[in-house]
Length: 104
Image 1 (tube, rainbow, N blue to C red):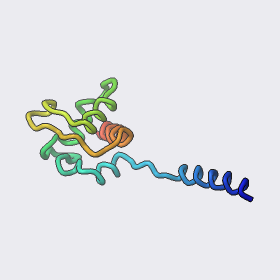
Image 2 (cartoon, rainbow, N blue to C red; image 1 turned 90 degrees about the horizontal axis):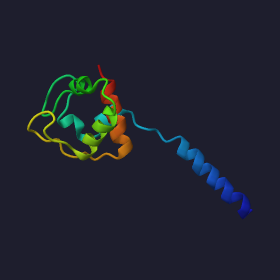
Image 3 (cartoon, helix red, strand yellow; image 1 turned 90 degrees about the vertical axis):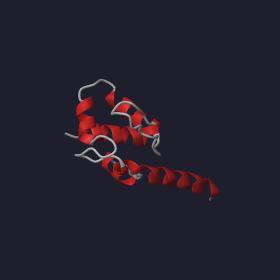
């Protein structure tokens, strides 16, 4: 009986992991503190997300660069106001960056 239960538990754990929902960039934007400084269309404290997308359009490695700025913060790119590091992991930062770059 025990030999049957262990594989059954392992299988159910694997099936449960496959149903984990990866948050979209827009969902992450709404769930993180990004909106306190950024807006889709208009400059607030930081630049509008569409302006960020336009600045990085067609640039090789833009998603990775932007993801690093989101996760680690940056300064001097859009003026004197620094962007603080954000509470995101690598995957979330990349999802946010790719979503921002998709905006037109």
